[in-house]
Image (tube, rainbow, N blue to C red; front, side, top):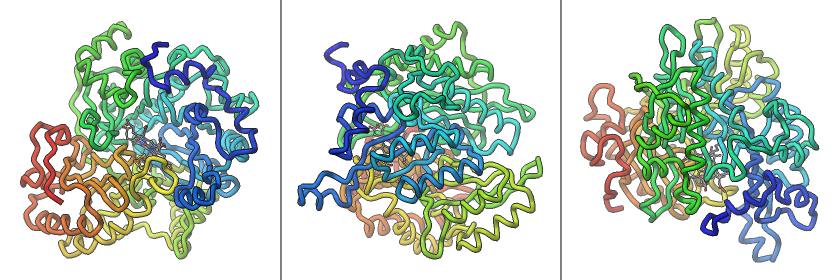
Length: 572
Ligand code: SRM
Ligand code: SF4
């Protein structure tokens, strides 16, 4: 290995197929943690060592070890689970985690608060539910997303099928996952080739950085395709997918004060047939494997490879490896990144309920026992439960009789299908404190109260039912994709956020910094007149993000990509 490569590259190199000393570390009872290098390696197995930041200061004062526990992320391509799997996952939350399920922005579940001595039991319980956590984190292809819901059309079912195939094909082959967590037992969802360490796709060093793939069925962009490393846009004719426009180079993460790190929307690379899609995905991944920056981790994502090498050179290398040329992109149009909430009926006669889950946290609160309600629904439901990339859940494929029962269960548990406003319906926050090690500010625990405060302005402006996308993160890494929100808030420090405005409602244009280091009162103060102006001066059907651009509230200096433009915030 070159000496110039990052520490993470050296750890992968020495890891013996992602084993490191994880197994030994799990048996070490003197600490709730694991060795530092293993903390990086366990990510490939779908888990992170964390500590409870709410008690960190107090424990340091008392000279106690940090309150360590693990976050575990399940791999669920397309976010689709059976009711039986939901019940199993729910049980695990009580048995081993903090009693909540956290639906993520990438169509899956996370557990928080799993202590080391419960780690293997938890992984085995996930395995028993015929699920796994392999490659849910780490420098590999992550959970693959698909536009919800396979009942809606054959094209939606094909999109889910492709997401599953891509996820399966791009899984690491190491037997370490079996050995460490399952005692060599077979994981049903792992590659049939099983415990080989050869890693024909990844090689010994895996990827330079995480890699994220989605499949979208226009006009719904619920998977936020332009935020992803690799995307497939279904081109549908007569209800069948005739091929995919392939997108590359999207990503959200940046670092405050480092302008050579930035969010970027993906480019359309070309067109492929359904039969070519998995191969195209593999070759794009391998070009990034070989061309990605392994010396500066902050520049290691595919978006920087594309910026440095150029889209044409990238396409040409992909085509050389494929042995054929990609076709010219076909026309497509997205209209929204939101989820269809409420009840709807598909052509197959089945009912589907899109249920808003505030910031994805499935838990019981007094008067709003959502977790119990979903458990009771899973007990009577015969269809699917689908996690969305907006942290919501779709109870899909219900019969008319089940629909009545589901409504009754929700009512009994104080769960309303309606949300208090279009702003809340389109709100999303990352986890942040107390579990995320990188959080600079609150997010999940703060956004609901900020939305409540903004609902006063919304009410006065007569915008209660209007869809306005608001997203918050506790740091600039962008886990709730805030740079693609009409109103984006990004944590800078305790109680302080950067305010971004002007992304497109269909997810195709980034927003732009509007105000720096603003607190709750200032955010409300700044947004109140803009919301009132929007209500009075908007054109027919104009979205808030488009309005602030058209009226010059934020100024676009390059087409499509506001964020890349020179950043000139108004003074806070
Ligand atoms: Fe994320 C790191 C949570 C989606 C960009 N993300 C983290 C970690 C693991 C913090 C850490 O490294 O210590 C967070 C764990 C918090 C916790 O306590 O649970 C975390 N990310 C999340 C989730 C749970 C947010 C949520 O509230 O739903 C999402 C889990 C998705 C999943 O199921 O796989 C989540 N993260 C995203 C997304 C959105 C997406 O992929 O569509 C992004 C932006 C897209 C992208 O990747 O560019 C995202 N997360 C990051 C980054 C910045 C990456 C970069 O290129 O700079 C980090 C930090 C890092 O990797 O170094 C990060
Ligand atoms: Fe943590 Fe930052 Fe991601 Fe929020 S955006 S979960 S604070 S890494």
